[in-house]
Length: 101
Image (cartoon, rainbow, N blue to C red):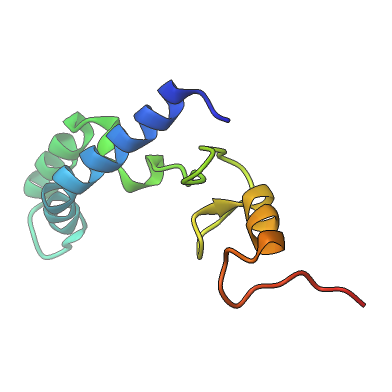
């Protein structure tokens, strides 16, 4: 089980990314627009740099929804590899069963 502080931090980052998504994308569009003057583009880059770091989508860390484990998380299920194995063995994930040959 991951520390509760790391799980809460991940939730906070996700919330901040969602709240700043529109502003951030608008500033990025202005900064990348070659038809605008260099001064306008630079001003947009400065505003983008002043935004909180945790508002960037690359700061989001995938975590298991049950244990909070950060590594070995399958995006399709939002579960760690360990929980997938346990739940599949118990038959709790539809369509998945343990292979045996």
